[in-house]
Figure 1 (tube, rainbow over the protein chains, first blue to last red):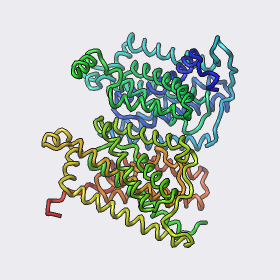
Figure 2 (figure 1 turned 90 degrees about the vertical axis):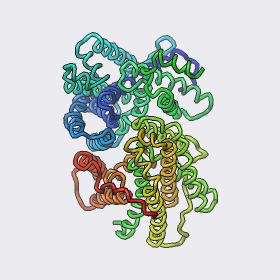
Figure 3 (figure 1 turned 120 degrees about the vertical axis):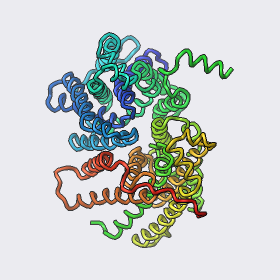
Figure 4 (figure 1 turned 60 degrees about the vertical axis):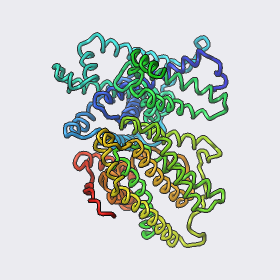
Length: 308
Length: 300
């Protein structure tokens, strides 16, 4: 498949947009909880998987249609995130658990979730029955599903932008993400904001899961395949920064798709495309650990003047 | 039904292998405060290095030595850029490192590809009955584990051990006392990785075939659970944690032969494991054994 597309720039850009949208959806929740609560939530992978399964149940077992499945995935995964905070992470934080303990707890919680899902939905690969035949849009091969997911992701980014800049609650979210104690001192009910962040972040992860699954298949390890790339987007974009993550997510999507072509040209396995994302993560960690959000004009100038 | 003696011998061999891994993680996290979520990488490097060399016909001790050295060097190499990072970033970077190694091994056919390496020569002479072979393996892993225990014991009761604890408590303060904290962190990371390498080398010859999918990130998390169960900064605890975790896992495996459960026993086992971790995080975050007090210097 790749050979035929190898020089189709438009297709590469389109595919990058698609992959990037997936990473953005998967990573926004991760960056928000990581930024506010300071620990990397490994169970986020399972939230992604959960969304995919919920959509399957609603769309293919209850036969309510794929759109209803997507909506159900959004709401149910969001609620799962809220419940996780209320019953697990919140109490742990109140007990004064360290960042390491929170991380380990998220690992344990992720295992519980993953195998509970495997118990409920089985280990076999599942597929959505909704099928949308592809068609050519100029030089690009698309399917209505891909188009609607890109549209959805871009719309969500736009809504997030409006929410964050134009509304009071968005400002409170940004404040909490920047400095939780200062936000609290300024009269923001950070508890409510944190729950909202869990809801929105997890709900988007659920959508990401449906998106990934609709293109491939649903397995209990679906989320894991995306998690490390999501971490790459989060760290490359700067932990806690929504705009950074959006930029990083699309950049990673582009790097990955462009990389596939390079790999084919070099006669290497296309599975190495994951390595490209990992390399971005490694370079981001080593050279810009604050992420692109941390790179300001001032810091570039300082670095230039100190090296020169 | 499997032979119960063999079952128990096999279990203790794994307690030895994972005890070494959990000991090495305890040196890194428990004593030095370094997050390593990619323990499996060094385990994998040890297993592959030794596996490849011994299948090529080199003697087992060459394979083991190479496994230790290559893992140790890999640990040193990754630590050079990684140790300057914040603790949680170090955790993520090591996690990713493990996945990178796994993907490379899976896609490079001269390194075995997805099927891995088969027919790794075992340390036991062929023609022995299974129980005797298991006993020899158990003796071998006990000796290796004892050596690792001895090394770890010497490390933590030396001035070096006090410095790494100092780094854990307050890196800046330790640096202010004139200690090159980076060098200490890099060396402990390298020693621990070498230990994980020997565990991997042993595991490779024990199961005689290794494949990339045996080295999922879950292994690293399992080792974290063992360290957490046994207790942070306690080298006996490392082995205790491995014993508890593996007994728990094996117990569940036996139980499924006797119990008629409405739930898949494999899933149940993992769910219970996850819950066990959550219970520990909530009620006994420091693990079962506490850190021993630093022994006074008596010229050990």
